[in-house]
Image (cartoon, rainbow over all chains, first blue to last red; front, side, top):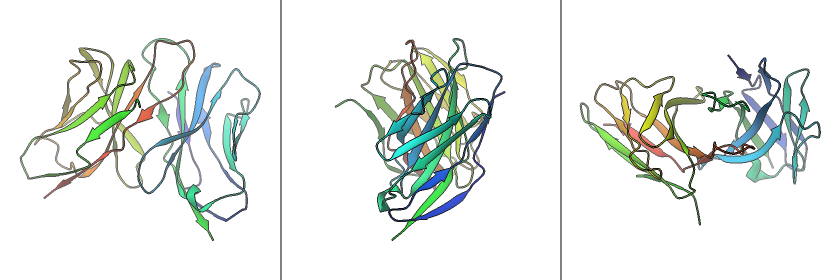
Length: 117
Length: 115
C-alpha cells in the first residue's frame, strides 16, 4: 500500500525568506500524481500545486515550486518570499494514475508552517 | 461559480442523536468524499462514492452512513453509534473519468460538537 510521510510536524520561516517542506512517499507504481494542499486557519483546503510523475519538469505556481525526485520518492515544496498569508497547515498527497479502485488520495499528516514578521 | 457547499458550518449534537451534514457540488464531478479531521491525525476517509447509487467505506466508516441518490449530493449522517463525533468534517469531490487527474475540490467544512 502506498504511504505518504511528512517528517516535519512544525516549521517556521521569517517573512520574505524561503522555506522547504519535505514529503516522501512509498509506492511500487511508476505513474501517479502528487499534490500539495494548504489549509489556512479558515480550514478551507486549497490546492497549491500538483505534479504528474511522468513529467520530469518540476511544477511551479508563482512563489511555490516543488523538487520532485522520482527515484528517491521525494516531493518537497519550496515557498519563496514567504508571506504572512502562507501560514497554514500543508498536506502532501499521492494518487495512483492507474484505473480501478485506487482513486483516493493518500495523505500525509501535515506540516504546520508559521510565518514570523 | 462552481464549487462545493457544506452546511451547516457549525453543528451541535446531543448525546444519542443522529445528525446529517450536507454536501452539494455543482462541478459535475463524478466522485465525492467525506473526511474527518482531528488535531494531529490529518485527514481520515469516512466514505466515498465514485458514481450515483454506489459508495464504499473508507478507513473509519463505523458510526457513519451516507447516500448518493444524486450526482450533486452526498450527505453524511453521524449516528448515535459514533461514540466520539466531535471533529471537523470535510467534503470533497473530483473528476475521475479523465485521462489527466487534477485532484480534489473541497468544501469549507462543518464543525460538529457533541453537547
